[in-house]
Length: 219
Ligand code: SF4
Image (cartoon, rainbow, N blue to C red; front, side, top):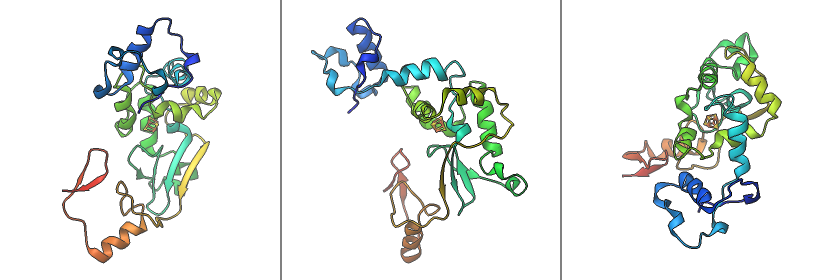
């Protein structure tokens, strides 16, 4: 179910404007909600404050700007990898950190992604957000939620900072090794010692396929 809250922040003046906006956001299987009568507003949940934040704060910087690329890092010390949020694939930290500790977060990959974002281009690793935004021009992706947690002044500072420069983290998720008692179907041996133990005991998985969400299923 998609739900709508904070309706008081909406600036629509006619019901058809509301319906058009909702239809832009909904997946195709739920389109044409306006043909249902009456519209069940309580069952819809879109925060227009989030949409306004995207339109008024992020989009003027660029259509693909996301502050997580500057200020957030997920770092796996066990595998020597990092990423900006949990959506893009992890990439190697590299050896630059031996002479520059800030390179643990400011990898060449992230700097290239920042350059693309400042130019309004879409880093391919962030496709999770691009798919959401391609659902409609009013769609709100994690790009908004992961940018809203920082001060607007910090977002402006990121936008002014040349892409090749190092920036300091504001938020950090760090794993010191891959010890984990779970074996979630969307995970893998790089992040779960339970996956490792299971494969060692029973051999490699055969016939694994993805369900399209990077969850493994058995064929
Ligand atoms: S654009 Fe989306 S996927 Fe990329 S860092 Fe921001 S929130 Fe994560």
